[in-house]
Length: 117
Length: 113
Image (cartoon, rainbow over all chains, first blue to last red; front, side, top):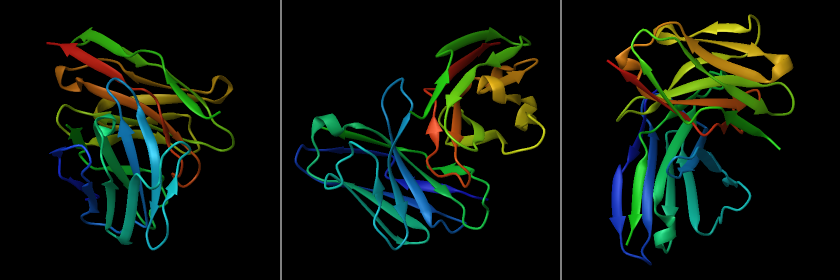
């Protein structure tokens, strides 16, 4: 149990376009999800905390108008990279906290590699 | 500032060798400590965790970790590694409830058969 799925796993887009990445908890409810960005040979950098039914909480230095997060249901959070540029190319990973488990354990998606041409 | 430091970026071992991966953290208040593992082509998944109680915790696949509060450390150990342990290992720290989890840079382990 406790599976998190991300889609798409890979996406290539042209500069200036927008890209949406979905993160779904398949077999549990997740009021809280997290979005990370991972640069080569570096750690996961927390971008924002996604809260179901309310606005996301962004980390310092992350542009909220650039990285739009929507958490419309207890099983789905989306990250939209707006007007993407080559510097936005990266590996984006989501994770979810399982509601009522209160263990602090995170369940991760498989990641989405974005390449902006 | 909150941070997690992993001492080794790359480790290469032969099968049956012992493993110890270092992890030190800087984080205020009560902490939860985790080791996550990412096998090639797979999701990150939990290896083991410490919340309270016995500072020596055991996880899956024969891994264990020891929380030493005075040293702000949570080192990962395995007495005898196998080829299948080849993966990337991440140390992580969070406050109670799992919010604001901070990750180390990761350690890539390669085990030679």
